[in-house]
Amino acid sequence: MSENKGKTFFIDQTRCTACRGCQAACKQWKKLAADETVNTGSYQNPPDLNGHTFKLVRFNEVEVDGKLKWVFFPEQCRHCLEPPCKMMADAFIPGAIIQDEATGAVLYTEKTKDLDYQTIREACPYDIPRKEESTGLLTKCNMCIDRVRAGMLPACVKTCPTFTMHFGDRDEMLAIARARLAEVQKTSPAALLADSDLVRVLYLCEVHPSHYHHHMVADAGGATDRIGPFSRRALLAMRPLRMG
Image (spheres, helix red, strand yellow):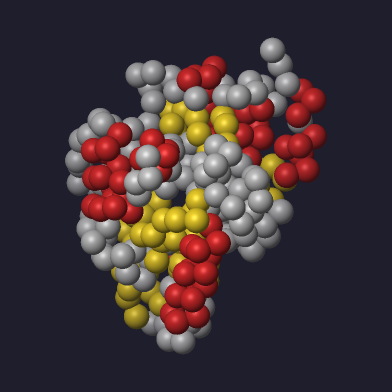
């Protein structure tokens, strides 16, 4: 699929108020189990993604230019243009992880329960895949593929009250994201679109990506050839090792 085809999210983190409507909408639409809330010293809850939490709003209070600032990060699978989790899975069980031709969505199938969880998780540069213990399946955001195929917006985008979240054809989202970035850079010169050439979820970061999360970008050092602990070249070299 051409990198300018398919669907893409644009998430403008300068507009996020951490209402967590997207997080709740994801659970409600997918009928995912609730998480027990516990006090961890942060408003963020649950503390991390898990087998039945595919969308998580992360809270961080950081110091920027000598001032304290709240930054919020509505985390989800990035639906990579060249998904390393799929490349790794294909080396063992082809078809366990697929990429939808029309949208570019990276989808986990029933076959993922036969994959080694840690191997797939470590292949992801954003540390997204999780395992649902009750089923053994590997899980993550699926772009609300059922809604998108029916001409609807993903549940998180539909719910967002602050226009933080946008979704549509990739070329349209790239144009909107770049225009918004140019506007934000007038007052925040360090603003950037995180890994926009690698993923289908375009995050507008007003401050350095590390302030949001250590997995905000694929490589905090800025290199884009490295995917998690594996390079693209290494992953491709593993393909002859397919089993079954």
